[in-house]
Image 1 (tube, one colour):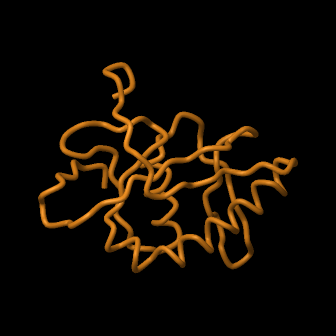
Image 2 (cartoon, helix red, strand yellow):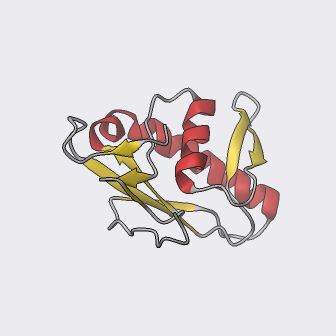
Length: 129
């Protein structure tokens, strides 16, 4: 879902998430979770697109949005419903932890993508939207 999330639409509270520490390339998507196989997402994908593909591949019914109140967020931020995060956050965190380990294994080094939940939203400029 790359739809508009209106803060008063009955979704309840929402959380803004951001991605950082992708120094050795874009984050990974699960290719085969049974065999712990991962593939890089193509460069230039926004966080909302990446997260939606990530949760879809994992079978987690988490909705991800790229804007709130009709305003686009910067590409490295996304919005998720708070209630869904409360229900699915633990499963997501475990899977994202596995992605971080695979990222370090595939790309080398000690750094891996980090997802911060509950950050201050940053609106995209007209060039980024």
